[in-house]
Image 1 (cartoon, rainbow, N blue to C red):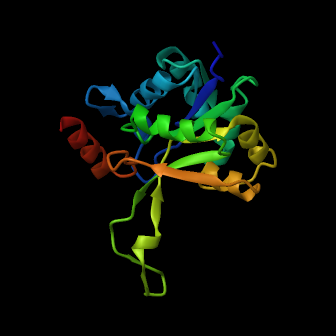
Image 2: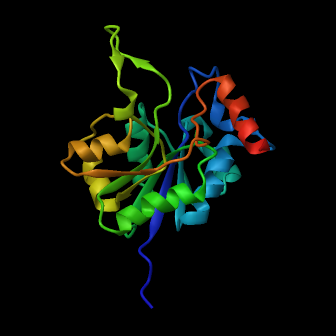
Image 3: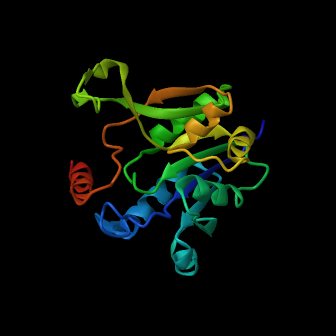
Length: 212
């Protein structure tokens, strides 16, 4: 029987939570910390999990997190992912990158992006329709039917992700870096409950989702 190519996940939890007003990744969400929920789901679908946290938290979180490795973050999200990549074994074939601040991402979302990469895609991202009315900064309405909101986890062929990060470029997500390197990233169905906790109201919304 063929051996399944190794899958590793990098959980990015190195932010300071400026917009939230504190380190949101360590807040309690239905009797479990936000970051612990994200790690637990990643562990269900991965052969290994690397968590990137603020440098001052590495020692404490190495003891607390159920992860294979805990490393210090960088000065930006992209730099933090690169630090995480350094802890992923070279034999990894697929690497997922997930924001700890999306603790409600389910294993089915991981599976969809992973399956696309297994089928030959350079990368895959989950998306959901934009439901709000959008206006550009000049005041013009934007046709929301042409827009999609991108979520994480995002999955990539491991060597392509490493290559995309090799020149220390900056981007708001890894799909943008892979596309900038000349590769196509496919979109798969995300989930409306896979919200990103950015403001205190988002934490309340996550608690409401868990209560349903």
